[in-house]
Image (tube, rainbow, N blue to C red; front, side, top):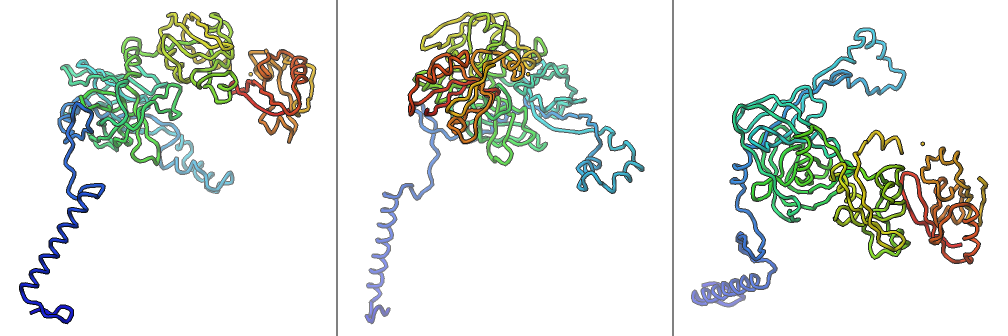
Length: 495
């Protein structure tokens, strides 16, 4: 017998109540399973289908077995001047200039702290043909006195540098093995989709042939590493030592070269797209260096204000901020203020698009450049020249009137042009901006070159005063300005 709320229940009644409880539990379980957002049982693995169902690979071991023999470990030795780690510790002086230990070290050690020491580093790479050509990052082998390549089977070889391209951080090496070597085939990084599975193979922290997997997180990433930024972002684990190793798609093809990570950004890595690398590798293999095309313009992205000023439907294109005299664009007739919307048959969305496309055009080839000028489309045939970084670097060193906007302007004399390094002298220069004035609050700065006001070209101070006089008080002025180290901007302010 069982006492239940002052009642005596028989064994059969007890069993009956237990049965009711079980039924309730079963009903509750079925209800939860039916209405819960996720089933209570484990989710079965979704298989890949041709209809676009999400594919979760069961394993990556076949891919690792296929590619790993072509992935190499790179060890370098560099000679560093200025002392070893012990002496470098004392170079950061905690006592300031009055260091009580300075004379002691100078007396007993002299110039020992300036002696050379050997710095060793690790990286990765991959073989691209049976002859032993290896692709890696430039920063892995830059300034190296010795480069050793270790294969998956343990064989080691001395490597020679075939060519380097610091601008894209790529390098091509070669080893002489005396026999055919395993290699990987390049894929098509343009076909790579965000969300696709990728695999990284390399030597993070010296742990050779480490295989990690993830997905493509984004494409076309700009991380500020150089003028040709166009990285694949992935969450496949990449760490120091992975540099130069391959990023592989599910067909076992190289789609990227693992290059960079963000300090503190766990799970974020960046790879140079293989389509960017193909042309560079080819040039390095045949010429030992990379020759890029040069248009002869300084460019910038189209801002929102610029888009409104020109009445553009979108912000796509690259604005010409400056045209270098006697260079290809100048000879073809391209002018500052033109918006390049197409180059060599490719649409231009940003200034980086144009930089990348022009760099890939052969020197001496003629490219069709389509621009938007004063609301009309014009096409120019430009003969591409060779980019000369030294020459480019060397090109980068009146009667005044103050108005009611608090802006003092001046004609651009030859002396002012030299002083402010102004190569395009059309316009007037802002000599001074009164603190707290309308011009100051709107963002006008000393040194700005005013080229247009409300779409009217300004060549002299007289032009500027004439246009300003016609604008009624309370109306908006649109100043089209060229600013040093920035490019063209539009500043709006009320009179």
